Length: 139
Length: 60
Image (cartoon, rainbow over all chains, first blue to last red; front, side):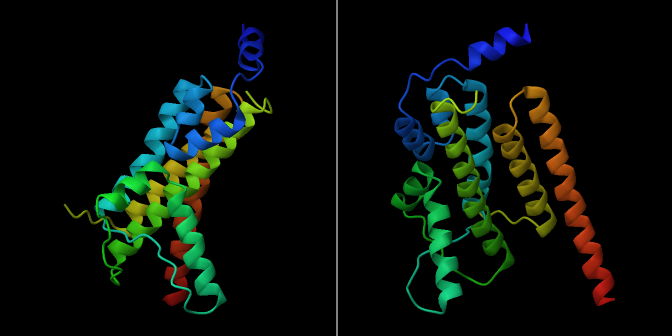
C-alpha cells in the first residue's frame, strides 16, 4: 500500500514550476494546491496567515528602507522588506487598504513586525517546496 | 482592534508555526513530518527556556 501511494505521488509534474512559484508567492499554499497537494496547501495557508494576521493586529510596522544608516541597518531594512513582500497578496492587500502603523518603540509593535517578517520567511520555505514538487525533486 | 501578546506567547506561536512548516517541507511521509515537527517544536522550547534561564542566572 505505501509503495502504491509513493509511486502515485511521484508522478511527472503537469504544471510549470514558474507558475507554481508565482502562485505560491501570491497566495500562501496555492502553489501546493495547484500541484494537487491540497492538504499541505491548507496547512501552509493557515500557518502563514495566522502570524501575518496577528502581526497586523499587533500593529507591527512594515519595513520601508530609507537608504539611511550604516550597512547593517540597511541590510536589516531591505531584508525586512523582502520578507514582508514574501507574504504576497496579503501584504499588498494590507498596504492597499491603508495599513501603515507608525514605527513606535513598544514591544507589542516590535513583536508584530517580527511576526509579519516570520510569516514571509515561512512562505519562502513553502515556495521552495512547491518548486521542488513541480520539478519532480520531491513528492 | 489592538492585540497585545507577551514575549512568551509570541515565541510559542513562532515555534509552533515554524515547526509545522519545517516538518511539512523537509520530510516525505506524513509520519516523518509529524515526528520532525514535534522534534523542532521541542528544540524551540528547549532553546527558549534554556536561554531564558541562562539570562536569568547571568543577570542574577
